Length: 461
Image (cartoon, rainbow, N blue to C red):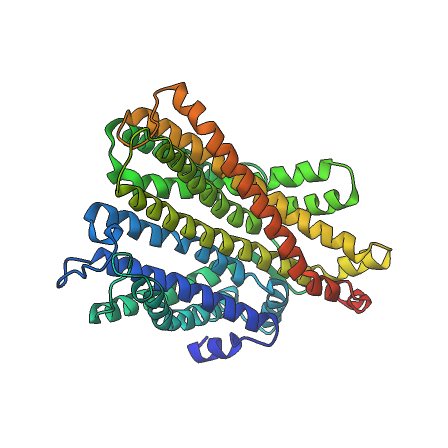
């Protein structure tokens, strides 16, 4: 199949196709802009003089690495949104691909069409990364006062970074599109999806073992040796572990809901247990966000309990914690948006079952509560687990460091006891925020739900 033919067949249609293109392009543009910013910061000091108006988190080499790492980590929820967006309108798209198969296309050609479709959207987003990076520079490098700027002025080197990131984004988008579509099996009678494999597969088990071992060994090295240079490896291992275990967390939450009393809990639980992959990606991001909040809660509590004054450095610490908190909130908001997109796409695919429930007398308000339970059952346990993990980790590291960090640092069980209150407070606040976000998401989905339960959808095959 020629590239022009694949591009013609991959042209986004109205409705779900257009929404998918916009979501993929927008999320890719944001992720690419963050990667360009991370590359720009990593080159700081190697090319030309350094702007002294920048914040100390950027000027100092040791702190700059953490800022770069934070920018890279912010791309994780955006990439999860890209993967979820590729699945928007998947049922209609798979039927279109089934038509291509019936017309004589072989599986490799069908995957090529899907790759061109996703690669085109990712490429458009990579092109928009240039203006997105300029907007990011205005927000972080122009508007803040001197001494608080986080991003230096653009240079010609940024153009080269943009070209490299654009090519990588387009190729990665094409690969992701082909992989996402490869999970569908097409036959002459329609489209059927491969059922989720039950049990812990070797690949998943390998990721769990590697992530656990590397995280434990790395944290031990950080705590005992104060070797923060291995922290990026620890974070990467923690991400691998979170994305491997998050679907199982979703399955457990779905089964717990389904085992309770009430039709709402049963419907929400069965839906989560039937398709844990999409919600699992969101749960993984929220676990990581919660871990960051737990760590910050313990560190801020330690800072506030210092029996002696830190002088001018107090503002330095609180500004850093505030910036980290803003990054965590942005990542959590993107994760909730990803969950919202996935739930909205489910409403589109489940129009006939929902219309059948409405015809049997189930009220719209009841189905809206099902959606809310579906969102809260994923978001609240994930973020609370993350806060507990982060708080405990920070407490253990504080005890091991034995005075390396400012604040109330106690060894052994005393550090865990001291961290209990801030961790619990952060968990309650995070759970309340996720509950409010779930209510807001359910309200946003009410129009889509109203369309899905229309009696006309009983005619949908």
